[in-house]
Length: 409
Image (cartoon, rainbow, N blue to C red; front, top):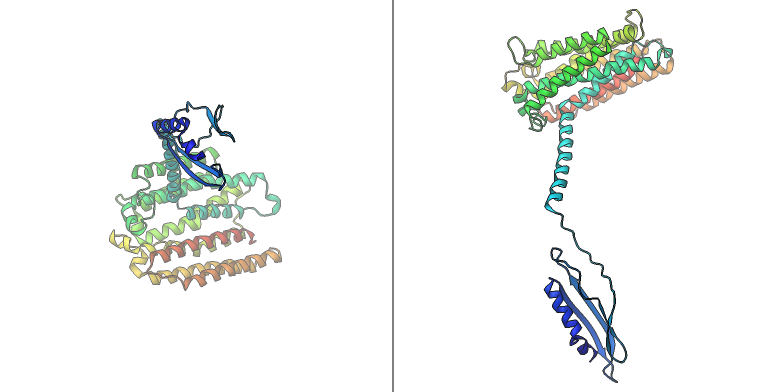
């Protein structure tokens, strides 16, 4: 038989022996049938499968080709190339370097994500919008808008961002134990940032903020930064006669004064006197801005403590929410915020702006107030996650108001 002749060939025997020697496995799967007239195979199908050990692979010494002809079997020399698919096992050194590089990249990403959480993004965006809005109120007409105004906005926003980072950071550093109960997701309380790293970020924010203000040289910005950093330090730092946040009246008054008067007046003066070089004049638009914030700031100050009642009570922080009850404070907040939207609506309706601007400002404040009222029915005042979501909504609505306020003239 042709198959029997093939198997008994010394070439195949030698190939099998060589394959076994180098850690290869050679298997044949042969299907054939004989014709009724002789010993010649009508079908001859050979399937060879070779498995290589990648650690012991060497080039085969066999460069031969077995050819079956009609008269018999012949052995021919040939230079036959083989394509071997094998998995390369990297050396321990290169594997270690790749692993270290990946770990460094992941560590940097995780650190930046933790810092981003540390600064309270919604507060940073809200305060940046407030800074821009208060500055634009000083722009009296479209012809005032120039590259100089945009530079003035950047001068106000950049140092203020560091001030917001300082205020939020120093509060987290000294509220470390309270946040384990009230806000365990924060990076310091969750262990994503160490205490030393957090303190370093806070100190760096204060240094950079003051440094930028001194470089800019705007007196309103310098005094605003110094006063606000001092007040927020007194609000958070646990030292004798300080940590004003544990006194509800003092805490609410500080947030009210900073949000309603100190910050808006500083940025208005910066744009009007330092950038545009005009004499100090409190315009109607700026008065409307202050009236709006006189209702909205205390609303934010009261709503801030509603989700934190459990931890505040445990650590002796006597907030209004802990003293008067979460539900009562919640509805007081809603009343104050709706009053703020009402003030902006009336100011927009009675403004001297063009008719379409009146429509935009009035309709915009109606929409914002309606969204607030609609969301109140979904708030569970006893659920920290629900009240925290409502607090975040307040900041978003305030940013919408900051877009509308500069349009009121």
